[in-house]
Image (cartoon, one colour):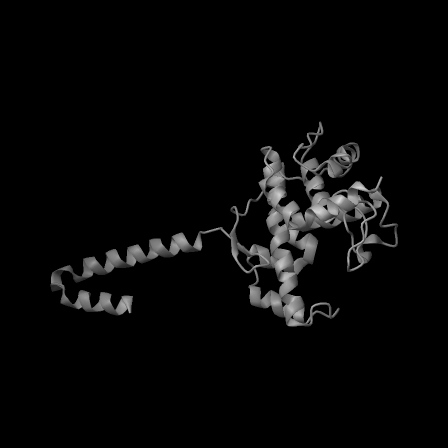
Length: 258
């Protein structure tokens, strides 16, 4: 309808001005398209189906990424919960051994188990960083060093590489695999990701409800990556949201373990 109205107006203009108006209109349309296509904002869906607008996707250049950083001193943020901060000596050691930023390690630990090395999920994933059996190579999932080496040091590092340093996409990949990473990065649509889950050989998400629940989980996991970004500036708004949406239960269980 808009273009039809423009055409009518265009035809009513004096003949001498038509070419100039055409080029002006075309230029304005190009500017509008460039603005829309350049947007990097992503909206994630909450369990209540309302939309959450999150920060722009932030990519870390390879020259200063968590993988390539030369970490001389351990500068772990104090914004994490006490159940995670008690692992500071190990986080600092792992940070230097595996060349991953301590805040990045702490963020994954916070989300996955809140520092509970004995954690077991409803799907049977176990340990501090909730590493799946296929990535454990037969090793003990409850050994913190094994969980670290097979989780953040192996899976997360690989996801960061494949996501070109996009931490939100890498977090999605850590939670849901390569298709989840591609979904959060915008390489596949929500519908494509949905049908990938429905047809997954494992059969875990064969129903509509389970596939939608997994998409929701992946979207939230990518959102929780903001815990890492906020830790850099001493904030914990997103962490507090995570705690209020069920994370506090993980921390209560973690507090009971030694």
